[in-house]
Image (tube, rainbow, N blue to C red; front, top):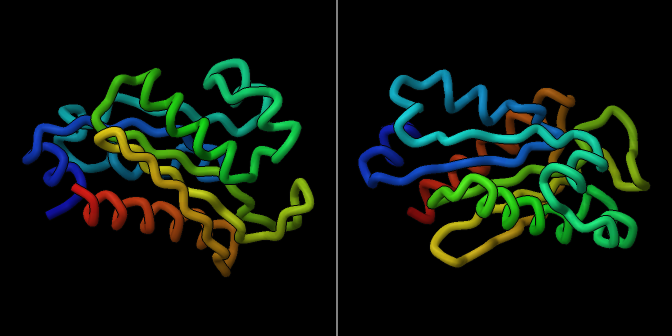
Length: 149
């Protein structure tokens, strides 16, 4: 069973807020037939100003912790959940490389998952090329969805 079949079998909807994955999750899920029944949409908020002005991440959060932080990831997933009004919301923020950003090492990522009034933010330290880090992050969030619903 793939992610779309799982979500559709349970009548659940999903949305996402993506930063370093650059729309990779949205692309992944929309390549699966019948995604339109469960995937309501996503926002690629690659830039801090978009995270703030469109997604609603507080400027104070970005100034205090940076965009590559647990705090930013949490606001991203909570605001995505509200914006799209879906059963599940996910968020991705981190540094896929090739060099440090905001003083944060390559491979440091945060993934957010919000479902049934429960929000989980996990920190990972991934290895590999830029493309490999992005793919690993998407694979992790897909497994998280399978684990929790």
